[in-house]
Amino acid sequence: MPEYAVPTPRRRGRPRGGESGARERILAAAVDEFGEEGYDGATIRGIAGRAGVDSALVHHYFGTKADLFAEAIGAPMRPDVDVPAILAGPRDTLGENLVRYILQAWERPEVQKRGVVLLRSALGNRFSTPLVAGFLSRELIGRIAAELDATDAELRASLVASQVAGILIARHVLKLPAVAAASVDELVDRIAPNVQRYLTG
Image (cartoon, rainbow, N blue to C red):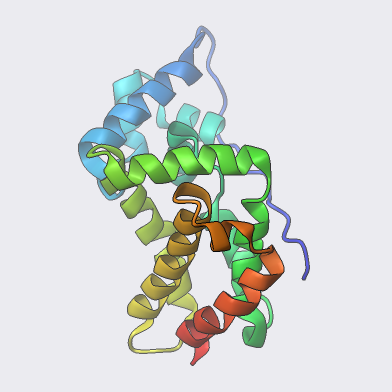
């Protein structure tokens, strides 16, 4: 299984003189904008306006809207960055590569700790649930669907997301004993065929 490098987000624009604390203001403004407008409704221009800075400065510090959102919510993984590299790989091992990538990433303590917090808040918080759902719909489900040559591509991609979310919740939030004790290899063997069928079957 190849390792997929995560590219460093490209920074655009330059800080202007006298912008002390601009990054913190932008981040606070982003939390407000995402909270009020949702992921799809929030814009870089709107966030810049709230922070009292130029849009170029937002891009300079945070790159894209997805970059800024991930920073604002403390997302432990970046499906918008990582998943396209996996989807560009061999079609007959997409399911295995995708499931293994996610499960292995969640074995890292720093990812697991932040991920569990995010999952818990996404499941039971009126503020974060629509934000995380919007982010995943656009940046994960949408990207997978765009790569599938099928009339029901969005449903297939959504089933992939549900399968992945389900195993993460069972393993790391609910800690179901058999699932929590299973190795990554065993879980990949059990889950990957279903994901592969959703993607290419």
